[in-house]
Amino acid sequence: MAFWVYAALTVYASLYPLEGWRNTGLSPFAYLASPWPRYVTAFDLAANLLGYVPYGFLCALALHPRLRTFAAFIATLGSAFALSLALEAAQTYLPARVATNLDVLCNVAGAAAGAGLGVLLAPAVLGGPLKRWRSSAFFEGAGIDVGLALLALWLFTQLNPATLLFAAGDLRDLLATGPGRARAPEFFVAIEAFTAAANLVSVGLLLSTLVRPPHSARAMFASLVLVAIAVKVIAFAIVMRAEHVLAWVTPGAEIGLAAGIVAALAAMALPRVARLALAAVLVMAATVLVNLAPPNPYLAATLKLWQQGHFLNFNGLTRLVSALWAFAALGYLIFLAAQRREPLS
Image 1 (tube, rainbow, N blue to C red):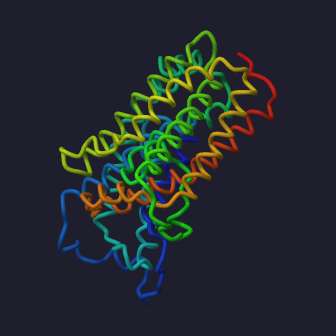
Image 2: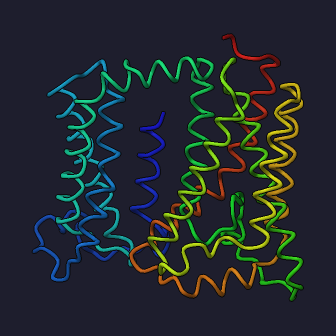
């Protein structure tokens, strides 16, 4: 499951922004015989290499135990090579992208590193302490794995500094809506506080339906919030100057974070069906609100400090995942509610 999700994200990131397709008359594989690009930066090399390390690692894990050791390594390397060749060929038709043989080389090198780690760690990851912890802490089943993947993707969306704290389901970039009329600062504080709190409560309630007793869902939720905050801080530290690393800590974010934590911890005492229903209502309310509200001019002013540059494609990827996450979570909550009972422990 994790491998296929990451593969899909890799395809999107490689072809972003998915517009302006045109035929140049060149063969899509002409780049293979071209000289190496004249201008190459260390960031470009590192991004192409590191981007395929998780691909190689997850692919090796997905192949285990059908393929092991050298066979798994070769199969993973072959799939990464084929995927990279195809994506670079597709970039030939995108004016915003440049297909190069060096990118393929870096991608394959990253996949090789990830595959090596995957082959070495597969027994420990899939059959060792991590697997035993997953089995003891969460209910069994592929459906539960989907929920855990949703929570991991929620953490991934926190890497984008252009979104409000914990906000999801924002489709305004896709719909190209107008800026709306001017609003007082208090309006944006209320919007951010509600969306942050509502999404945080829904995430906490979703997590609580996956945790197997007697493990504490509240303790896991507290850990999840700390990880999400750490991810947000790391994202701002990487893409913005050090003095702006806490620029996301606005009055609305502070209120929403505090209110969301308190409300989530209290709501976990509700029956399972009530928790699922409340989480679904909050996801829908926050999604509607974030799409109806005009863009926050204060967030836009902060983001002027951010020169996207090399992060343009990554920014597009995180925005896509953030936009789709709310709808995927809503569908998953409906799926859990349809089961009408707790999974068997």
